[in-house]
Length: 411
Image (tube, rainbow, N blue to C red):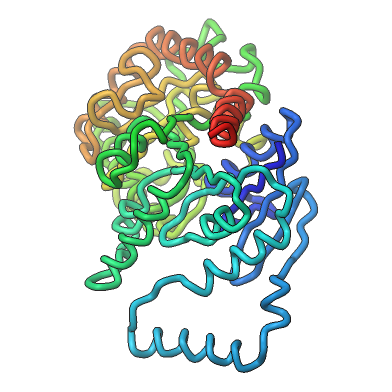
């Protein structure tokens, strides 16, 4: 297939270090190309459009119509944008979506299907798909409303209603949708009124299955020293909803129970300074290491030598975080916040423990339980790794995406 991969609100996929969304995009595109598909990626970054066919070489492009546009038209557009900004008039994302659609038509001619990473209030991909008469498949990696609330960026009043209407129509107009977790599939159906038969759940993958051999993993090594301090790890950004404050509170409580540990924090983000201060306030400075943003090859080594991985989200649901699959591939039992059977990537008391969100007491109890039972940790880690090998390679993800794209084409 000739596939156009679209990101109207793009992530920095051109150069490392890559954040979670950028890593997801690169891995999906690479895996589809490995299956023999021709994939061209168009991404909008800081008002500029970038095209790549191999994820290594990026070419800046511009809509022919935009270059040739009359000076008066460009001045009119600037005046409209300024009036919207100064008078706080309703924002429709019209020009952004129109320009993105123009570039899609110009650069992605001949594509049989569009695959787009869905974002809030974007419909340039939908415009282009309808003009070129090709199916549009949307990737849904989480409810944008939840993300905006977590960042305190949710629009209000009339702008909220307009944004909600535009986003809802874009979701319901797609030919097919891919949800990266069962929770997100239910969210699409129940909250956004998308028809169930149009939504398929396809979980994320991990590169660590191929980067780490079983023999490198602590879960597959016998004779661990029971007196050795536990190595704990959190992989991800420093943002309030990642629950790092809850994790630090839980570890402070576990330390009072004489738990010896070292916590590795891998990543970066807006809350890093606050997290450092919080660790100091709780007297955990000597037990917490901030390793910064690392590539998958770099953090794979740390995960291989760890004992427990954490995903303590608080204030935001997470059904498909990439860290869950990396932990499983590294043979780690995972302690994650969740409700009911979510996140579905974990099986409670089989490959990890699921605790109530925002509950440091429950989290501390889970930590102490696994700390006291190295055999249970090893069994959970081994089962997690075997599941990763059989289900969570990016090749598995791409094969499922391939089927959805073929179904969209057939329809």
